[in-house]
Image 1 (tube, rainbow, N blue to C red):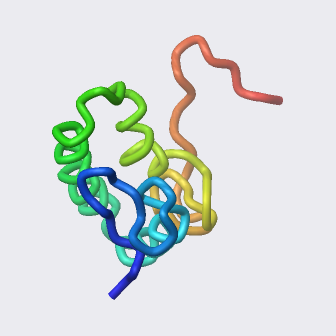
Image 2 (cartoon, rainbow, N blue to C red):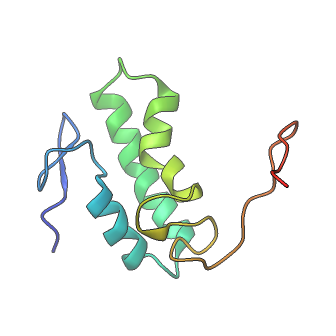
Image 3 (tube, helix red, strand yellow):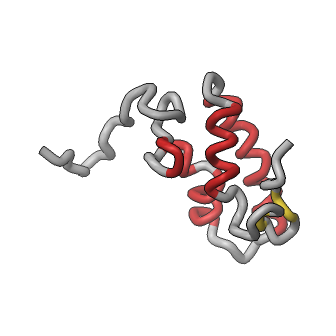
Length: 102
């Protein structure tokens, strides 16, 4: 059981007072859902819906990045796109109009 759960309705972390999910909880979630990335997205999506109700003044894009966006970006704990943990999977296709570095 983690101490880094959400404190609602302000959506801060109960363990470190950072915005939830905090870096520690993100690492924990990556480990817990390492073989189930869709389940992780559904879990976080449910929290996203609750957060939008609790914080209607927050732009939707901000909340989306906070709750779901990090699962598709390289970030804390070696998070990657497909496998969510240390290098498993591949990178997403480039966005239209975006150039890949050489």
